Length: 302
Image (cartoon, rainbow, N blue to C red; front, side, top):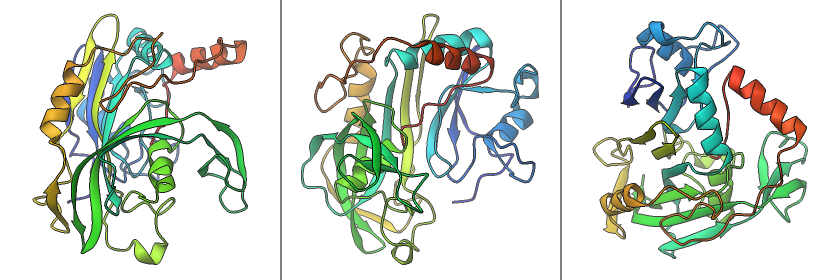
């Protein structure tokens, strides 16, 4: 697959207030360094110069974050009011997100809820990474829930691999990658939480993709489903041999499911656990919200 370029922006949803783009892998959302090119922000300015907001630093308000290496659905608010309504949905956990991934090994359980608290890693040399509670150097772990459904078993470049659907029920930094690694099934191509560098030379990218996104704002239901990038036609190294669960059927389940109730948590396709309740908003959090509205919001979960 060709690397991301300024010209090849893919839009999967567009309205007067929102865009949802299919972000390329190994592409930064934005950068204050002019040498960082291309970025999603620059792609948007190239394709939609009339939509750029001069009142923001980057020109566009990104409603959430995807890691540099993660591809897939990313929502952009086109005005301050839309940004505020999206922020409210994220804050109240009414957003539905689902990811596709190729993970190392054959996952034995077809459906599971991963429940490992995640904190920051204070170990020397790992300051910008996360870890699960109980590991050395794990600071301030917070409850974290991810639902996993196995779609296929197969081989990637001759090694056993599973294709899975992941649904984060909380929004911790690098949550999906950390949870998969904690199961001893790291994401293929994940150089931070996966295998040693000399064993991850085959994949051309990290195999994590934001597949489905739904943001039920008060004015409109922003919903987008991106193409599945993990198919043999796009990557000859991936050779599935056993179908466990149809992705098309899960998509129908996701689309038919009611929007999560803020008072009942965010049930996914596997089960219906209740995420931990959030404490009342502090003054510092409110200030952060106001800053977000003036620029853009980030809610990392992959």
